[in-house]
Image 1 (cartoon, rainbow, N blue to C red):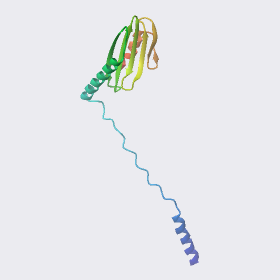
Image 2 (tube, helix red, strand yellow):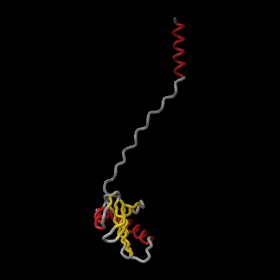
Image 3 (cartoon, one colour):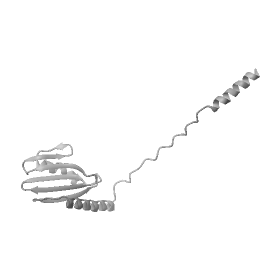
Image 4 (cartoon, rainbow, N blue to C red):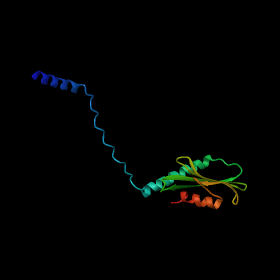
Length: 143
C-alpha cells in the first residue's frame, strides 16, 4: 500500500512538471485620457492667428485669371478647426468653397449665378440658392 501511495505521489509530482507556464496577469488598462476642457482665451487667440496665416498662405496659392477672389478664415472653437472660405467671381459665375484648412477637406461648395445654381451643397445637405448656401455654411464661419 505504501508503494502505491509513493507511486501516486511521484506521478502527481511528475505530471505537475509538464503543465504549461501560466500566462502573466493582464496589465491594467491605461488611465482614461481626460481632456483639459475648452481652450483658454490665449490658446484661442493663438489658434485664430495660425488659422489666418494658413488661410492667407492657401489664398496666395490659389490662382485666378480674369476674375476677382477673396477669402475669409475663421477658427471655430466648437469644432476646434480652421475654416477657409474662398469666393471667386468670373463674369457672372460665383464660386464658393468652404474648407477645413487643417485636414484639406471640403465642407461645402456653391457654383452658379446669384439666381441660378449649378452646384449647391454643404456637407450632405443640398441647397437650391446662394442664400440657402450662405445659411447652411454660416455656422462654420461663426461660433
